[in-house]
Image: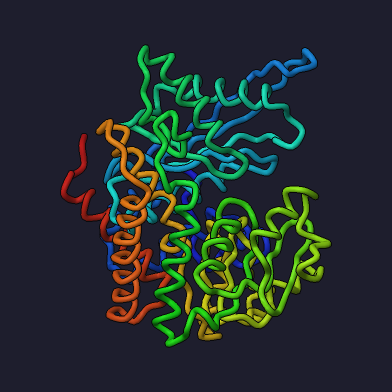
Length: 430
């Protein structure tokens, strides 16, 4: 019997429970499983990861000292295909966070209906104080420790917070050295020169825009008259801002960890990006005004797009939301206890496992191209991405309407049903 079994949703009340992403993930699983009437045994399989690994990485620092870094890799499900999910580097990475992110990857791949399961990894470190050489040694040691559990048919990592195409190149090279031959399909999000896919850097932001477009149409709005507030200006937030601005949306505020900038007439995103690159901050931008980063999240707007970390919309602040559409570009930006408050305000939610699935979808395309040895044009990539995102959005909304549940629970129910069907068809080995 597995120890430390998950608790019931009723026990998630309180600050500690609300801000534990694993508990939020499990609470939503509980709700969806109950509504689906899932077999108790299948529900247990969906609840627990297939495999969890903790590694302790001795790394030689530039000053000659040896430091030990702790890393994690969780493979939540491989019922529909290899585990798939990013690797993040941050000082506050926890095993519970990685568990939650791995499970969300399972549901995200199932919602998009691509043949992957869910995985996630992380290393506890502060990339801002590490040199490129130190980051490379951490990455290569992490890969070497886990290489037997990675592979194109086993587990395919990708970039995440504070990791990028260069990180993936180091992983690919290290894995290939152990395999004895070049294996490009072991990771996605690589440089184009090493088998990366065109359209991959823009994919998550483009998927957020596609979903927002459908939500706007669903509510009878016109995107040329839609204001947008975006939290985060990294890959997801920055690319969403760029693409949505080009498409006619009015980006009135960008919120970052060190401040926020606002312009009621719409920010010049290209100029803001240039300012950020030059100064290292969004603040004091000539084309906008500095505003409080907390208050900016609750500006009156048609679209709010949180694209940073989890747990930014909580039971304590959800009542202050002032948007028509909530497009979740980040993983887990809304806590379980905030869900009913958001629902009560009549906000149309595009849940994270739908909204940000553009990234893993084009990662799937990259994996396919690597295995074929044939690469597509960016036009083909974007067209195929639009087809999958369209099908996913329509499936979730139709499921919500037919089952009379909100979009988030509909996405979970749809995803869990697909994974459960795969488990039933495969049977239980042993």
